[in-house]
Structure formats: structure tokens, C-alpha cells
Image 1 (cartoon, rainbow, N blue to C red):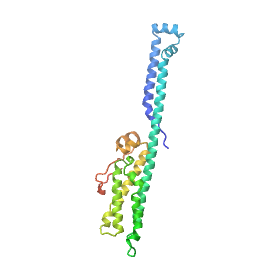
Image 2 (image 1 turned 135 degrees about the vertical axis):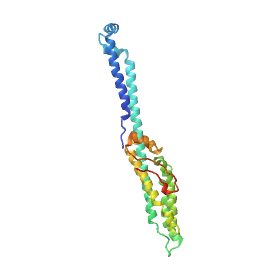
Image 3 (image 1 turned 45 degrees about the horizontal axis):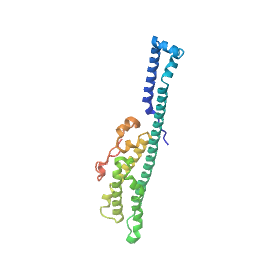
Image 4 (image 1 turned 45 degrees about the vertical axis):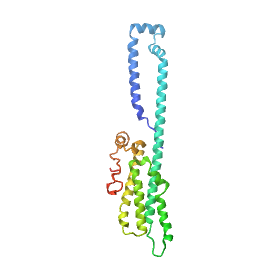
Length: 244
């Protein structure tokens, strides 16, 4: 579980420190003025800090309460972002496993044998086909954690199904259908791997889901990678996902 950090509080702390130092200078300067010196002597026993504290104690209490609320809200927001990132990381791990299951079933699929009927061979094909229609695969097609790369999950599934079907029936174009399966699978694996790395380095889910890695690089990630979309989801030669 990643812990929320307080780096965003640094600017507020610097501003507060600056205001506090200015207040000390003002108090010191005002206490040397004859009018304030006489007022302080008669109302606060000659104590300059005590005079100013009692004069603005309500304001000071309100500022302290506001600062405490700001710290609490920031911690809650950071914790929420960390929880979202953890959930996205777990989903990406599930998608990676689902993609691997499809590939294992695809490479294990054998052509229909000469001594078996289609009814006898069909269960072997259905075992492969069921992995391409798994609930996890369907979730990956719409999950923003994959960013623009989620749109090629459907391409991966359809190409794998076509290639599996062509192999099963030993069609002449089986090789042509199969040529794009492995490259698309490797591209999806790179996408999942590098998005997971970015989440672990502190990137927000919003940054990786909206193709905003330029901001992510400056703020969190410190990587020279880039997130790209699919130029043409139906041509695996044009896949541009993560490219370091």
C-alpha cells in the first residue's frame, strides 16, 4: 500500500512561514512606537507578544483550525489517490494474466485431426475461445487504466480468434492471420508493464488514463518514456504504445 506524501504542503508551509516572519517584524516595529508602547504598558503589562496575542487570538485560532483542516483534507486526498492507484495496479495485473491465458490457449490449440469429427474437436476450440471472452478481457476493453491502449484489446481478441479458427480448420491463410497476434500481445504487455511502473513511481491514475505522461514525467515519474495511442488499430505494424 503506497503512503500519501506531503510534498504538496511545502508551498503552503513556505507561505505560512513567510507570513509568520513578517508578523514578528511588524510586532517588533510596532512595539517601539510611542503610541503602541504606552498602550501595551497599560493593557498588557508591557508585554508586546501578549498584547498582540490577546488582540488577535480569535484570528489566530481560526488560522490554526484552517491549517489543520487543510492538512487533513490533503492527507485524505492523497490516501484516496493511493487507493485508486493500488486498485488500478491490481486490475492491470489481472489483465496481464488474462492476456497470457489467451496466448497459452492459442498456442496449445491444435488443428482438427483427420480421425475426429467436428463435434469431437469443437470442445478443444471452445476451451480456447472461452478465454477470449472472459469477463476480465471485457473489462480491459473499457478500463481507463489502460489509457488509449485499451482500444486494441478488442483487436487482440479478434485477431487471436481469427488466427485460432484458421489454425483449427487448417485454412490456407492461417499464417497470415497469425502474424499479428504475437506483436499485438507484446505491445499490450509493454503497456501494462510500464503503466504499472508509473503507478509505483507515484503517477496518478488520471495521468496514465488521459495520456498525460508529459505532466507525469515532470511531477512524478522521472522517465523518458511516452504514452502513445494506436495509430491504426487494424495494422499491427503501426502500433505505437510505450516506446522508451
